[in-house]
Image (spheres, rainbow, N blue to C red):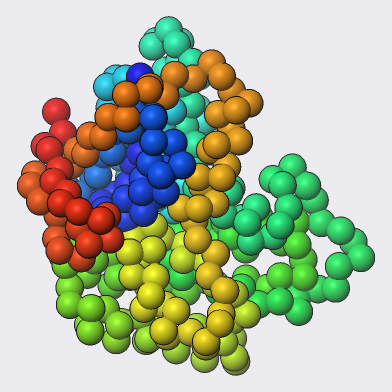
Length: 282
């Protein structure tokens, strides 16, 4: 048994790295759907179908938990799959399994509140501006605006789509070119708000690979809310409460792709901390 991690490409490796460090004894199976990346511009129903197929593949390979290490999949597909597909699939598998996302722990980290908590009526509205850099699909879903408003009406959320970044990261673009793109998106958001955000969420796991470029483009000292750490914190607590899930104990690491198998680009390997090669997904 293992923990399955799913992303459209290499971005979910940022979450995988945090989880491997937090749970070194667990077995992990990572699936990148690089044949269909990026997800940000795809229709919602297509994202649901692709995410369901990936989750089924990971469950069939022995994962008890599947973490959607992809904001677009988490924003568009997670609730649909949990409500409409997962109960029947659990019955067919004959063992407890679950699908988790990364948006809930990110919102908990951004608001300082648990998911079940609601807004304090005494809070002054909108003195704190939070920028969310994400794919077009995540921004269109408005999941961050909707869910943060339920808990913290004093936080104004502004989403900024960054459609070029995922293809550039997947393709191993030069850091200088990525820096220009990031600076442009930060400038666009700043112009729309009228000033720089007070804090920012990197709302696509790919962006963690180039987090330093966002730090350079934003005003010095702007806090970044990091999804990998928030997800690792949340999953550790979840596993303590749900001992029915078997996450393995051999420390195995497997990396699959629906795209071209082989070594990942130099930027991704430097982020991972060593050589990294994907196998062709069966």
